[in-house]
Image (cartoon, rainbow, N blue to C red):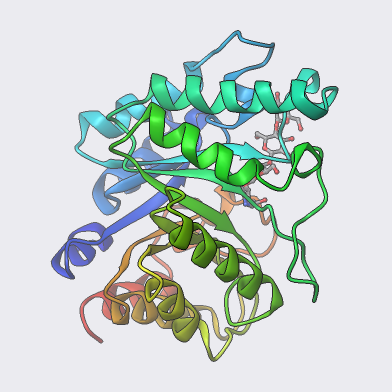
Length: 301
Ligand code: G3I
């Protein structure tokens, strides 16, 4: 079987990969993508610097190549990401205050409107919480427009594409810790006040071990009434790699509101983590032990 087919048999879950438009001409890459995966995330092509390189001038060339590939093969599309402090275009980095706020909301509205009806889930806001023990927001020019910037973004996204699931997405949230608890508190507040949020993404860029409360953390978010998704999974190569992939997969399957898993690339050679060989296929496109462990976990092993 395949990752996508096995995930679908487990409650209709998807199994996705981050895709780079520039690799869609590589037949080894495309063959694996088409065979194994039922969802795609654009690795960079939907980010603010790519889609609005100058103010109010939108370009969707790379993103549309990925979207059209996915639609042509019946794959779902995760939108990544409407707002992130990184990969902002220079013109937006030069703004602040109410001018930046207006530009942010316009960006969310324009991009979500362009893709209305095509995106299964949007990462509306990415990486807005601080690392470390504070549990608070990350300082950024977005945050400095006012603490309500995240909810303003979610409301704009809902208005532009009412059918898309709207996610908050972050990393170092792979267990119960100060950062994940800060996000948990925000989501609980959003649900209490009717701010439109549907899901939380757990990037899951993992090292050589996994937190023992990984599943419990997913479950506590699900218990707030949101879906959870594993959105950018990759795991450092090491003796534990296959086991960690299997553990993450089993954790998602054990949480009924965990609706899908995305790995952050296809072959090790496609990964942003150069040298760590963190993916399911080697540079030649061969299945690794981590692939087999993931598939076995999807099949109930
Ligand atoms: O597009 C330019 C190209 O024109 C230029 O010639 C080249 C020279 O360096 O750079 C190209 O841009 C690179 C871009 O990837 C596209 O390849 C950037 O330098 C590079 O920094 C960028 O890295 C991406 C990174 O986000 C940026 O922060 C990675 O591919 C991408 O995998 C990574 O993805 C993020 C998620 O979006 C959010 N979570 C963490 C994750 C890993 O960092």
